[in-house]
Length: 477
Ligand SMILES: NC(=O)C1=CN([C@@H]2O[C@H](COP(=O)(O)OP(=O)(O)OC[C@H]3O[C@@H](n4cnc5c(N)ncnc54)[C@H](O)[C@@H]3O)[C@@H](O)[C@H]2O)[C@@H](O)CC1
Ligand SMILES: [K+]
Image (cartoon, rainbow, N blue to C red; front, side, top):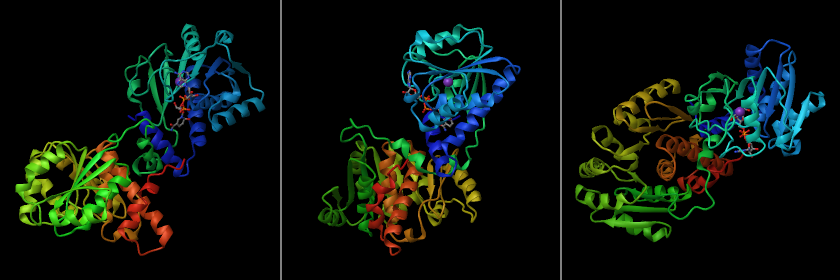
């Protein structure tokens, strides 16, 4: 099963892997033609009703593959209004070949005749709201024919994710849907076939530019919509919590707070006016601080726990006590990680160990990343939390799905880049589900490091990566 949102991500990832959308459209159109041949003998009449988006584009390809049939293409709207280049190129190819084409600008002009098959390619996953005109009238006309109705990807008017329609929708007999089954098709009373259109598995497994689409920001948004992150850290190390908190801001959080021992808090406040800092007594975290921390954490979207915290026994006890009573979302890093396997918590955790820390948690690792993926997935399942295991290939899993990230470079082994990753992941976990936040966090952090290496060649420091997080977040379509 794949949602429309994930499908759009996978589509862009496929493009970045060298499989452009026009190629996928060719495979989709071909698959629809194959399905049509299974439904009707050569010589039968086929009416293709095409919309102006890529769903229509798929069926314009289909028309080329149905030479043995009597095909008429009805385009809903003027050719100049076709909304994508690839769909328009396929229209132009039909014009050049003098195919039987009709353009319908007024719904009263639509005359489907009495075809054996109607191919419904008005709208696919791009539908929003109830069908407008001329699509609504065309849907009724399609439903009124005696023809076998074959829908491209999803019956027009139906939401592929929910199976629901806000108004009239095409009642299809058959659907050819692409790449994977869609959640909304199960509820429909029609035959659904899934066509492999050549999207590589790698487009789903490896993070890519498509994964960033999930972050699309609403221009009407307000402060607080993109997250309020609390970083709990510092003790023996002072820079780590500040790096994590600044990274959260760079990754789009509206507010980043730090809770740290007094001396660390003073130091951070001295050099960063962007952070809200609160200090607690003593020079490291202890169980006495936990009630106040829980109170501070309660109104935050995500807590990043661990950067620079140290592994004093009292500190680890405090992490355990915090997690036992916390039921929000937390990113756990560094020394805080070793507490996770022991603790019984209602919290949603994203754990970001490197391989040494993974082993300290009781997890296993392997040289080959494929083997490592299996081990990480099993261990995430055992823990009941999301794992982001850092390495040349970062492995992310929630116990079911696995995502692998290939961005980043050896220059990033310098201290502090892990703190940046924890902060970025914390910010993303404010707006994305935990598995996506971890996968996109790894992708963005690695990309920021790649941008930095391109600029400096070598000798990276963590703040170089931190400053390039916004570049790592840019979608270049
Ligand atoms: N990986 C993918 O995502 C692939 C998608 N493909 C095809 O592309 C389709 C999605 O294409 P698009 O994103 O261009 O979207 P659609 O072709 O589904 O719809 C977009 C068009 O519909 C219009 N529209 C939206 N809501 C409407 C309404 N209620 N009434 C009337 N018009 C409405 C829009 O203005 C736009 O012109 C898929 O369903 C599939 O058929 C395939 O070509 C291959 C790969
Ligand atoms: K359709």
